[in-house]
Length: 187
Image (tube, rainbow, N blue to C red; front, top):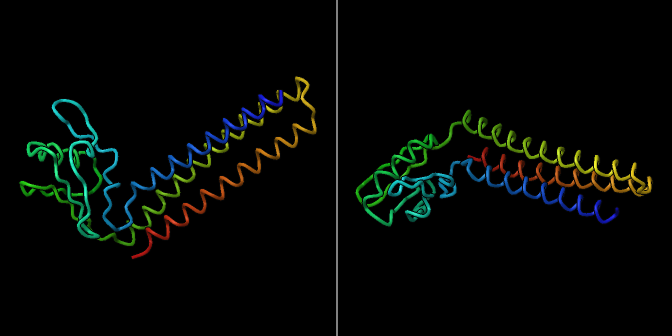
């Protein structure tokens, strides 16, 4: 019984770790006024009829803090890359000069910064909901085990352990969000 409770707690912790990774991935896509190739993560380009990640058909770089340059491995990919960036609806305008696709990152307005901070808080809240769902599953499992004969006081200790796990993960999310908001609001 104790082994199954421990494995359930380990699975719950793994789910919480995945939620943190997902949050970091979502926050990386929110730009903070500086050009970053990670802003284009998830963009798929039509490569001979197959949707292919942008990073597999081109080299991405940032020559300065306001520009992303994309150099395709094949010249005929300039058009599909440009089209994919438009269709991704990121609010960015690619410029094709025959060699590279360049994206100039416009400075953010204060309203846009606030909107992005709010969006990042929404991602944080999604992670916290995921944590609470994991906690709920773990506590339900512990209660079921207590009914099946697991010692009640040990079950209570395990519930406290689950709650402290939730608290530490919630603090971690709050720290990540605070850092991202500071990054977004810095002009």
